[in-house]
Picture: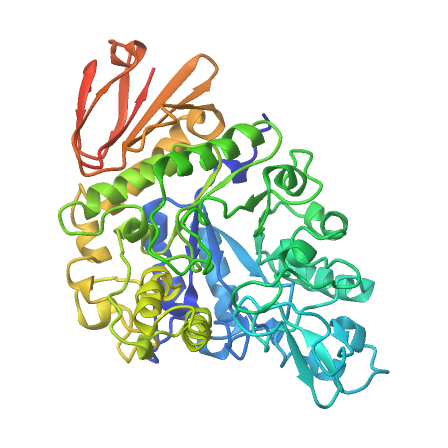
Length: 557
């Protein structure tokens, strides 16, 4: 297998609005990130994935871009960005920008020109259509609720928006659109950035004719089959690779909702014609249901193992995996799959980290994950900021699909705002995030869960992540080894073996709060066995092991 720096890296995602506020306006900013870079250096990460910092009206927290070559005023200036990039590079940390190119803001200059006239050269930058019999061009529903079409009075036509109505989809069939996007990417590469995370990149190519989708409970058609992994998506990405990506030494990851293993082999093929890797969502969707993700369903461990193991084994030697539990679009995995109660919070956070970081692929840490941050205890709808949760609440309760009590319970558990509460730096007012009023409330558990406390204690979640990262740099087997799942049917233990050049690594994770007897394979209990890491601080293991609640360990021979 070809050895490449981004395969050996650990990525840390920063959600700038919630990371650190340097000027007291309640919103995190670029100067704040620069100030906290030494903290990330101490953790040991290699790459920062920076969620969007471009100029934006903020309808979807920066994923609606009005100017790709300017910085959102709340975050600072381009000079602040340049200083942050320079400081990161001085510390040996790379910066991966979030590229949002399926859609722009409706306040982007291209869209403002597009709606003015049918003769505008920008009209074909977006997907405009005439209505059908006084209705929308087709029955597609938006990801954020309601129709995926918005009638524009000035244009006298409908435009497509798979997300918010303030996020019109770009028309990638237009070569000029692709040229503009590639020029903008080149501009950032010349500035010195180190890669792109590509937002919903699997949606950029739509099926010609835009046919109706199968109607769901919300009354709208599912656009997925006509948009996800569309007919020209690989053609467009190969063009992007030729025109931009291949000319620089970059890390690239595509957010590919609906991606299959077979499609991933195309997106992230070892031949390197498209992207370095993709984000797949199969393991994130295991607790989905008829009402999308809005439920209290728990992920079955056997299902989780089956999905993650499939991606491990079927991409082996063909494409590269990305590894993640959390990001800005998911609730805190500790509250979803671990145990966020006081007794087991730290050991289960460490167990989840062990399970993920010992697999083949590039691991992603979401801000606060290394502290064991948890979901927020919401008490009212007014506390939410996320357009997805708020729109879903109104739509599903008004249509009688779910009661207000049920829906509030579900958005509190699965809503994206759980990940977006401010980073908990210390036990001072507002968790040390801001001297002002934060844009979204700080989790009240910051008094006991914060970076200052974690850094002060050797057995903390932070220092455990630090050790996992250092082990990855020390042992190539963790990065490049093959993968084999053991005990696939167990609903309690996640056990797998990694192999490389005659060495073997056994990883054992107890996903329950029960004590479980586990007999190690004979080779891993001999004199040559080396315990690399244990979330209970153990120094050795015998042949038969009584695993404690949420215990995890990794043994090398």
